[in-house]
Length: 495
Ligand SMILES: *Cc1c(COP(=O)(O)O)cnc(C)c1O
Image (cartoon, rainbow, N blue to C red; front, top):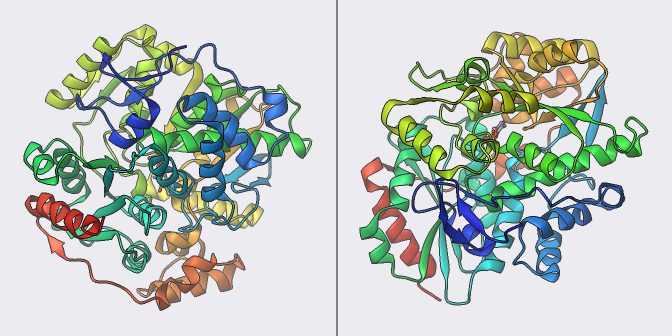
């Protein structure tokens, strides 16, 4: 295999893993990928005997070929030894005839923590002494919170988070405003999430800003378009398998399936990487909410974002451009960068593209897809709590009915449902589902859920309302570049 990353849209753009992580995404707007993983397989039998950090070291050593073993080990121990509340990092809970992979035991109680505890370590290792990085993140809530927690007080790095004013849950806003470090910056945008996201992408290509910042201050991304954020997520698929084998529920080598609630397609793409690396995965079942661009694609091969946008009870999945789907198309087209570029150009100009029937068939071989609207999500939360006394957050719940449909097709393959957030991060929808209503005060709603269900509130969420909070300025999208410039000067003025 080749040891360097290329752009999904141009195989002449080549980069080491370290440079790919520092840059975040390619100047031609493509995403960095290792072009060929065909002869790269983990040794599954030996891998699943290791702890989380050990399994992660096996996976990272394949995908980060220019990191030394010692560098990888140090990154993994710094990221995972102390910041997760469960020693398995991502524990599996068995419920009825399926298994829930809980990804929310990190410092902000969202699955983004798994990637965003490790990304700063990888980036620190990749930077040369004179380099600085300002991380930019547009967020609908979870990415910003987890990125602030991961990057706060790191050397050579700063972070700027932009969230839509009034567009995040009260708990998420409180988390962001109380995660304070000497290099953290948060601003509310007078606009919606798409405005924030689009402008962050513009800033990456803003030549004037880059010149003002100088050659040593780089801009990079904390979203899953950054391969350094995506690679850590591959590990928990192996960790799920290990736990099922240890519990005697799966025999080593037998296939299992996963159901994954999706937004940017990062989480489920990590599952596909796990499969490419040798995990016996039968199907990856993708779940959407009412923003079901992908569910429609899986039936007809047409990716079409020309449709109304819905604000749902699973807001972290309210997305119409699933950025990481581009990486899947790249692999499934046999690495045809010119073809991927033509599809993505069509998406940008017309809002849609159609793939060849053979490409669609190849995707359908490994993936299935469905969706849950808000009513279905709340019905699923209630059903699973009433029947099995397991409490899901609305994102996880969007996967439940989709998973049940897949199990009906294939009842014998063990099924793992990925749980992407603590139910206490989205208390209004959970209370509506389980109690029939919610209070305007999120603290009261949290207490009511705890009283009715007995499910513990994660410690970080229980104390977040007592922490002193900063104010976030409200700025226009046109002011974002200046904000980044000024904050970069403040953060990096001492070194
Ligand atoms: C980010 C997020 C998702 C979607 O994950 P992708 O990697 O973007 O597909 C789902 N649920 C929650 C709670 C999230 O924060």
